[in-house]
Image (tube, rainbow, N blue to C red; front, side, top):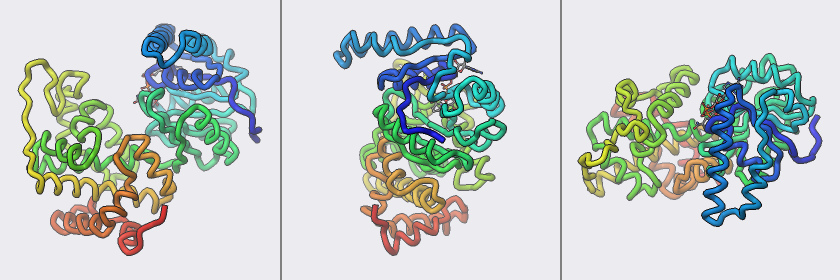
Length: 390
Ligand SMILES: NC(=O)c1ccc[n+]([C@@H]2O[C@H](COP(=O)([O-])OP(=O)(O)OC[C@H]3O[C@@H](n4cnc5c(N)ncnc54)[C@H](O)[C@@H]3O)[C@@H](O)[C@H]2O)c1
């Protein structure tokens, strides 16, 4: 259905945090972008934010002022969707509601040419559900950018059952052209990153709830010994517990309450108390000026146990994502290193540490707790015998 030409004109629907960032990415790659929002003030806010960003990039010497002006000049705020008629691509980035997204695609379907690709930036809804009812589901696909879109290199490309393979290929080429790294993910809850990263938070919360170590000690272990840029609690506080808890709960419910994805009450209580993290001044840490900070217990043996326990669960989740063909092993490695800055790909890490060690750690946890969240993936058992070649 699609020809191989590049995307020259694109429309971004929803000018919020993600939509404005996506518009910037595309305009930086030379695409003419029409930015649409139902609220005029959202468009004004997005345009002045984009202007501020360009000014900062020029000040820092990352762009010349001509380049900055050129990028801004390629972003056209529009008040009527019919102005999107000539688009080669539409990316929807409105709030996370199946009904609202479906109605946007129903509207846009009548406006654009039949060869226009329709993409959604949803992070938790199924692409199949969004595309059902759309006249041409074969041209609808997930393009999942990460926040902030201009800085985060990864884009998960998520075809539904109905998506034309030519649309997938075209999106892979376009994402590269925008200077991003694309990985193809199966249309399953959390796609790659939001699924595989769940134990980074959940197992840290379990270790805390079991009284094995406190918050600063777990963060210290994961950064100083594990090599992660941020510890799980610092990161949850940064993401915000409203966002992070909701992703966990959504993945868990969509996997029919699989205990592997079960949320933790400790985080729910923070959410209920309004302690959302940095943005409210308090989460696991207190960010108000002058608040006392607690020192970690820098016990190497304890720290190593913490890292190994969380790592074993991450490796198990990574092997399950490959086992269930959510992603290829190489896309999985790219997603976790480039999408969420893990110090190593989880398969490479498993091979280095020993998949057998990860398996032993899980089996010990399973036998001690009886909790099926620790059940090893069949592929992890295979890899313990024969590590994969990637
Ligand atoms: N924020 C993140 O970290 C993040 C990361 C990846 C993906 N996402 C996904 O991206 C999407 C957008 O998230 P966000 O954080 O940018 O939201 P946001 O609330 O910042 O922005 C949404 C914008 O959409 C506009 N809008 C609402 N209904 C509309 C409609 N019918 N037509 C046009 N515009 C409409 C709103 O006025 C608002 O400006 C969601 O699906 C979210 O799940 C978010």
